[in-house]
Image (cartoon, rainbow, N blue to C red; front, side, top):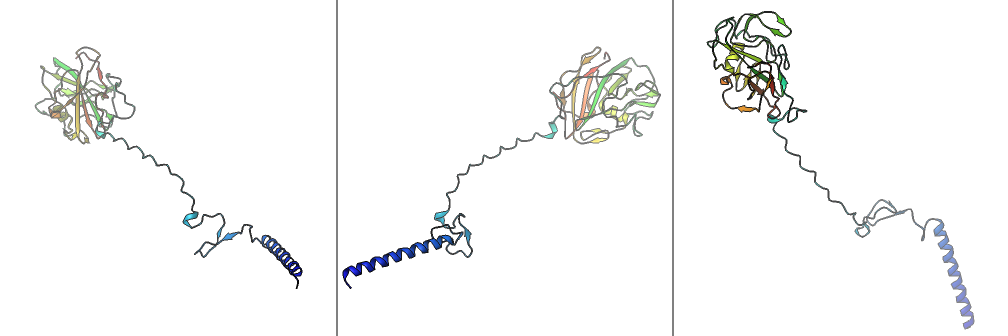
Length: 283
């Protein structure tokens, strides 16, 4: 074969080869092969196909981790104040003084009425007799009873034996009276005697027939805290600042125009959130 024939044959073979490659490439593309995207790819060592576009399990193909924002720690809760000094909601620093009035009811009136069976029933109590004398010594104090921040009424006709009829919330008559007594349920304590006498809160509760101690006030039990405040002599005088009483509550003296607050917690209303009272009598 001459060199010319060999060159011609070689060129024919190369052309056939190019034609076959073109046909093969078109076939693969039509069937989804070749350079066209295949629907699945297999990862080395994987038994199941994963869609193309899924992150490869190869570390080199893993996307760079997105930067994360460090979370700001939540602020610590403020320490809760001890419930023993927590005023009930709504009480401001300067509460409105309470105007006391004859025949009033001050607080929840569920504590009872009059002396109990173990209290004054006409007999002498703590050396105090029951009588119907008009006494020359007659002054007034006030007692407030607060339990968990709620005010309860001090009962009417304490210190009365066989009280008469009540008129407009006020009882004026009885078979006999003890020197310490109440005519209505607003906590107004009438203190009488033949001469000025140092009566005590414990004597009033003994006439009432209810307990009074560092852990009990009448029907309520718990730690007892007491505050006192006084007003000047004269009509419609308002009590001044409160002072916590640190002694035996039974020994607390009853004096003219004195406000005595007895509290049982755990919720207590403490100064300056305790309201003053206004006495309607002159002394």
